[in-house]
Image (cartoon, rainbow, N blue to C red):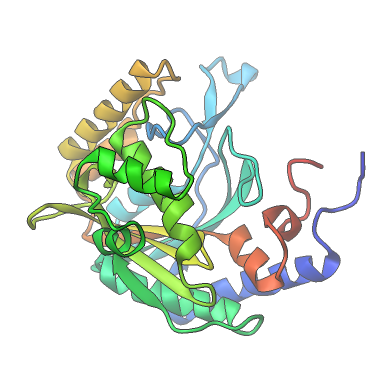
Length: 318
């Protein structure tokens, strides 16, 4: 077993430089850095995410969760009147280990009051260009709607028959596991078929996700309805996931309960709902947009290394 870091010292110096760049970027825009707890009594209900648990025996409490994102706590700050805020923090997710995944990693998350997801895409583009351009070639950005990306890459409408989507994936040698639902199939198509075809030397934004993939985003009133959500990719690697944030407490509760039911059917762990978040939404979340950026992936791209293990001091393997 090696005691050495998984990143070189030059990469770690670059990482420190990029962290300073992030803070300078937001300081120039008057966005305030905040810190929120890593531990929580509740966890996300998203079926695609599993949280890690921790025990505090001296507190005689039920198991605690290590947060998978600071989103819920940051929204409570927004509801309390914080204004524009950002945070750089460690987050934790179970069942994630690979070239671009670690169970513990660094997330950059920020919220802009009075903005929508379109304005936030502009700022994400500015930040990522500022961070990456000094270290690698960064071409012009591309923006595609979710439906447009599917039509241009797979030749199918993501709202069409599921069998057509499965067939288009099969032609490309991508097997769809038996029993995978529509949302899971679309996720597979995006990650395995669409992402590898995206612009190699610049950012691609995919926006207007299907309404059933809204997560914590607002639904835009159009026909058909879509989620005010985007993802940003560079060279096929997802870097950011952003929303125009849902502020309706009852709608958010309904979504959480639907996700819990999905987890129950899959015999997955059933975390308790974050009632503090729901109370904050009921009190009043300001109109805002927020985004999370995988900071380790940005470091890896800037350093030109093969994956995020080489972009952090000690990856899980060490």
